[in-house]
Image 1 (tube, rainbow, N blue to C red):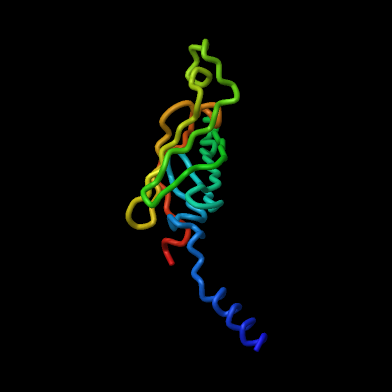
Image 2 (cartoon, rainbow, N blue to C red):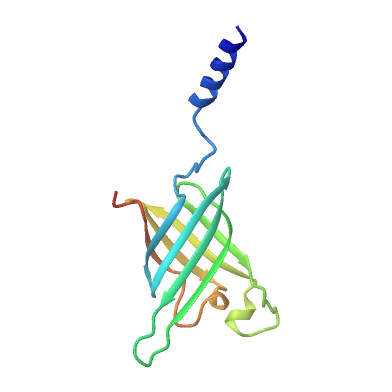
Length: 146
């Protein structure tokens, strides 16, 4: 009798769907273009919280120097997107420099049709990449072509 209950309990656990996994359906790698090559890695943490890593690269073009950078943290997302904020380590409220006078780097994320992600760098992010590149652009989920 005990074996029956043990087997029934095990089967009921296997049959329960994993609702807590990636509720927005956006986890994974994204790649695309903006001022250069863009990449985003989203990993579901819990509920609507995700770890995010954003990278940008503009290769050298002859004598013109390239550019690159990245930023990472956590973001709250739903099926339409969210806003990613990271406090600038070099923030100086008395500075007149755009890279130092903004308290936060803010990037908007919008999910669109066709497994696309639109990034919009709003302000304060220049300290995380060079002046010749940015975090704005359109990306496609790496599984979109499957």
